[in-house]
Image 1 (tube, rainbow, N blue to C red):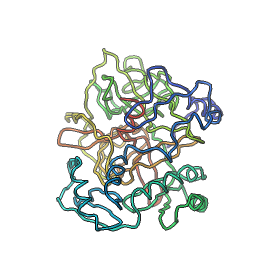
Image 2: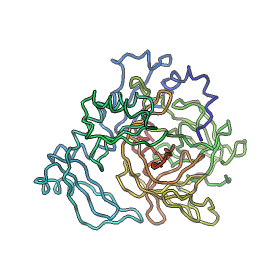
Image 3: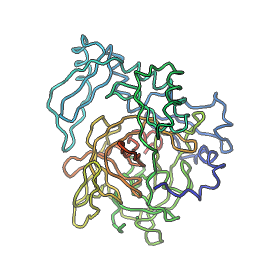
Image 4: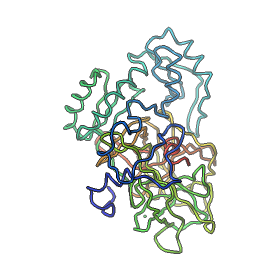
Amino acid sequence: MPMNRAPLRALAAAAALLVLAACADDRVTGPTGPNRQVSESATAEEISRDSLAPAPDTVVYGGEQEYEDIAREVPGYAGHWYDENGDRVVQLTDLAYQDQALRVIDSRPQPEPADGEKRTGATRFVQVRYDFATLRDWRNRASDAVLNVPGAVFTDLNEVQNRVGVGIADESARAGVEEQLKAAGVPLEATLVEVVGKPEQYQTLQNFFRPLQSGYQIQNQLSWTCTLGVPAVAGWPSYLTNSHCTQAFWWNTGTAFYQHVFGAPFFIGNEVSDPPGWACWPWVCRWSDAARIAVPGNVPAANQIARTGCFGVHWAPGCINTAGIAPFNVLNPPQWWPWPFQWVDKVGRTTGWTKGVVTHTCINIVMPPNRQLLCQYLMTNMAGPGDSGSPVFLQFGGNAQVTGMLWGGIVAPGFQRSIFSARGAIFADLGA
């Protein structure tokens, strides 16, 4: 299932491509992302540590900002979410602070339940061993060293399990990961190391449709097949798709896109924003696998996501038939950062419309040969080759509130997940 990256020139040049500066108007902007450009001739190895953007051990992730804020006001706070029964779960190391936790959490905006989600109004307190700040510091301190172990896939502050989580490709990586955790001062009893397999970027083909809608098949000028992603919140009319669907990963080449297949009559626009990322030794880092496509004025475009005649739940694929079916209208603003156990939908050209739940939030994940994506999300929605770029959203009747964009998946015995970049992370990279 991995895509063919031969046109990216030799692997020896890949690192240089990934850190090249974008054009003047392709800035790394947003509420949490670093606003940093890198010299056109620089590679990750040539950039001194003095010139680097904040490394993962000092970054505050947008997807954890609410936890950060609450932890400053509630001693022993370790996270909260809504479980699958609809109860609000609040974790504390000291249950004496229940009343204070309620006051602080209730004073903040609460997420609206999407279709299919329950809210009982009940709050359940759970006593845990480690508070959020402790797990955050351990995760941040160990993340770089752990992800440098061959076979390490992602690091995670797993608030649900109250552990520092690490995903590994197979058991061969466990000893090295545990050694690095201990060297970073993380007690092994405070960790959850699980075999998750290797992440793959989905790439592969469907019907012509106008006006443009998210979820339909697109191809670039090399006939690589992906899915048209969500409408941009700035620079409309334009849409997002995955950077790995362009000619060069994390580098704006002006790649031309077509819907549904390559050919002049089907041209829908060029890539206009795809920042190079920043050096975060020994990787090149970004918040999202995202690029923006600007649509010319003669191409009809809609702020909508295609809807199919049926959907699949978790690992069941949906159908791809859209004939006569009204699309979802996209709501603004988007949901910038998803929640644990939140039900989310996705629509992609290969597996169609599927529903699932968010299982891992704000993980750092390594993509060979030298890239690291910060604050990514895992969900149980079925996806496959060609679904790259699929909009991930909350469904409210005939409307959709976008919360991210799918870019890949992990498949291993006992562990199957799709991977997406949160909408807030995409904004941090593209400002759109």
